[in-house]
Image (cartoon, rainbow over all chains, first blue to last red; front, top):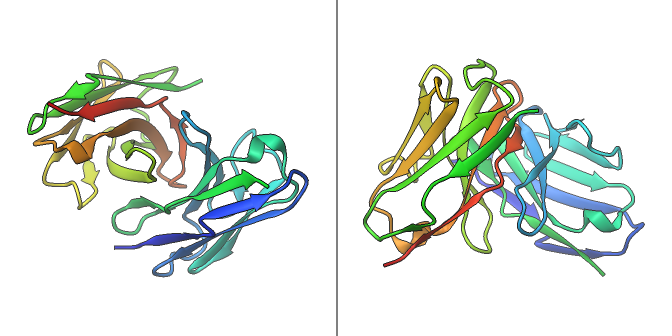
Length: 109
Length: 120
């Protein structure tokens, strides 16, 4: 079973700063089936990035994804107040077919 | 615009069966492009994928829940449903239905989620 480990657990930054969130998989998943989500309290997650680096429709270009193999990164180039939330990575295709990381909380410093 | 809406009891007794339905509007559940999934979020925790059903009726479940889970589809009603049997209190969670494209595996559409509490 593949395990996704996100770091850091909590990231404290100020608006305008750059955020770098990491997702490491326990085995190589190539360069295709990795997604990122944003979740705000009381809401369902929102798809930000799919296919490692493709932005979902309507997602601002300050969000970008990169990586391959076992190491993946979500970068938010310049934080806006609405970006402070919990972020999850997710893989597709390896047992158990779909699985999520434990999340990174991005909080205002 | 495709929308998903979960429905079902908010309270289930321990050892009973949790049953939820997801209604798809604005699009057809019979589209061959998507996996229709159930995902849950335990209180204060992360996301756990439960399983999916394809329009053909093919299913795939998380091995950790496989012995207690079944997902079915009703294309005439544009709905798919979750049954989770013999629930303990640890199954208390917000349950989401969601759609993933089979090509990308990203969940692009989610229901708002429904809180299910397992308690006597």
